[in-house]
Structure formats: C-alpha cells, structure tokens
Image (spheres, rainbow, N blue to C red):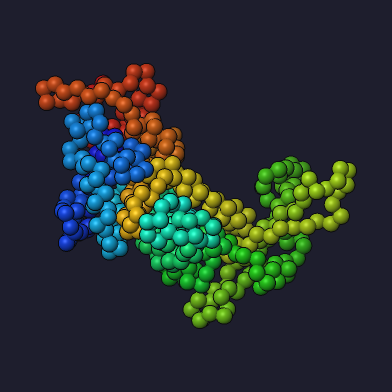
Length: 438
C-alpha cells in the first residue's frame, strides 16, 4: 500500500482535506486532524475494507512501522458521524480537486482532447436495520439508500468517478441529476479536457432540466427515450427504406454487398422535445431509433417462419454530430457505468456502514476517491492494470503481503519471490517517487 498512499500525498489529498473540511464545534474532538482520519479511511478502503470495523486492517503486523498517523476504527467512525450535509459538500469539493490532480499526474483520461463521455446512473443500495436514516423502499421494492454517480471515460481510458450524490431510498432516479451533471462537466474541464463532452444516460434522465443543464454547460447529450405516444408517432414517420442494418449480436457481414445482415437496424428522424415547457427548455434534435426483431425462437413452431416482421423500438434523443451508426453504437456503450457499480460494490461500497445519513454520504465520497486512487495506481503500473478491475489491481499491487525489516534507519520490504507482477509493482513504486533497490 505504500506507493498508493504516497501517490495520494503527492496529489495533495491530506492538504486539501485540511484546507476545505472544517468540522468546527464537533464534540469529543471529532473534528481534529481531519486529514489523518480521511487518509486512514482511504487507506483502509484501498486494502479492501467495506465497513468501519474493517479499518482495523491498518493496525496489524508491521503497519505501524510503515505508516504514521493510523487511527483506530472508532476514531474515523466518530469523525464520520460528526458530518453535516455542509461538511459532506466540503469533502466533495476536496475530492473533485484531488481527482483533477490525479488525472493530470497519472494521465487518467488520455484522449480527452478529442472526446469525453460522462455517464450518469443511479442505484439503490440495500441496507439493513431500522436505524438507517433515509432508508426506505423505492422503485426497486428494496429498502435502501439511492445514490447517483457520474463517470468520465474516453475511447482510450477506463472510467473514473467525477461526481456522486446520496439520496433517500424513495428518491427518483433523476432527482438532483441536473446540478450533479453541471458539477461533473466543470470537474472534467478542470482535469484538462478540451474535447467534446457528451453526457449519456438512460430514459430516467431524459428531462427538460437535465438537457438544459447539458446545453448551458456547452456539452452534448445522448439520452434514451421512453416509448410514449409522441415518440411512437415520430418513429412511425420513418420510411422503410431509411433503416440501416448494424453490427449486433448474431449479425453476419455480407462481403459481396458490403453490409451487415442483422436482426437490428437503425434510422433517425428530427424530434422536438419538451414543447409544453418554457421556451428555454424546448429542444429540437435527432431522435435515433434502433429496431430489433421481436422473434422468440421458443414460441415459433419448428419449420414455421414469421408471417410478418415485428419489431421492438429503442429511441435515443441526442444532439451529437457524429454519423448515425457511430452515434447509436456510442450511446450503447453507456452500459460501462455498470462496471463501475460492480467495482464499487466489490470494495468499499459493499456496505453503507453508518446509521447516520450524512456519514454514509461521506463514506460514498471516500469510496469513490479510493477507487479513483486505485485506478491511478494501475495506470502507473502497466498498460494492463490501467484498464483492469480495481479488485484485480488491489489483489496484485496493493494488498500484497511483505516482510518489513529495519536496519540503519532504512526500511527493507521483502516481497514475494517469483512474483508475476513484480515489474508492474516496480513501475508503480518508482513512478510515485520512491527510491527502489532490488
């Protein structure tokens, strides 16, 4: 864990927390040394901790020799419970600057001078116990807390989390999405992104306020659209010869005709959205439509084909200027955000551990910082680890057992012999400024 902690220090996380997070008036000294407590929490999350008690992983073996300022689990727990919503926003502010420093230091967004995709989505995190503030049954019929994340990625880079927000369990998927998108766009521009920014989301985020937030920030948008009457009427106006087959599961490339033989086709039509709202919210843009054959082999008797083609339609509202096929395929890659959810739940977001809502909101922010830091460590280690899952990076490069020896004021790490990832670890170690002798 030493190189990852060193990387966090070099990118200014302790200094930013000391500057921005001020828990004045907190009881029992909970607000003292916020930098040490945040670093203890982030370091524990790097090692795989997913609850406050798991922070004890930092106090076994020779960890006290390797690291200074490690707090007992009860101390960070008291610290988190002292948070108000204003303190959570302070921590988010520090996190945005830290993520920008990471991105510039480790080149986390290569290709951002051309295009950056911002993907927004929400998820209900199931929690247990009657004492959880804000936990209620929502649209998924699961009792939990509902959080939003916005990730940034490029065609060359794996996604990093640039904005988060925790809401009560029954909150709608798009509640608070517009200001969160504005924060995310500002964050990626602070990271040095100079290319086109495209905000992608599913149909839950197709709203006048969200689209207006994208346009106000000079970003493009691409949102799925539910099949309402007005949308179905627009799709019905598309002529039959306007549909283009696309590469889709089970598609076959016809070399002679140089086209795809596919069960899916795409077309587009101009669409005016939000016509019932104020003029500033009204938008006319492209409605991309993908149709897929509604043919279930189980329901078709053997030897009997379809009498006529039946289709399922999927619509996307966008102001992208890319060609039709490329734009539609690019929107489908919005599903990459699900990998981020899986990564978070495989690490620190395995639980929202506190009974207090604001403590869980701070935990969510710290969990995403730990994930971004893990991603940065992988980017410094090797090309493979730059795109690997954070669980893989943690297992191979961070949570690695070593024997620590001290002689003549020099610490010596005895790492595993015949270690397959020794070269990647050495790359990481030297990249963060350590002197390494092997």
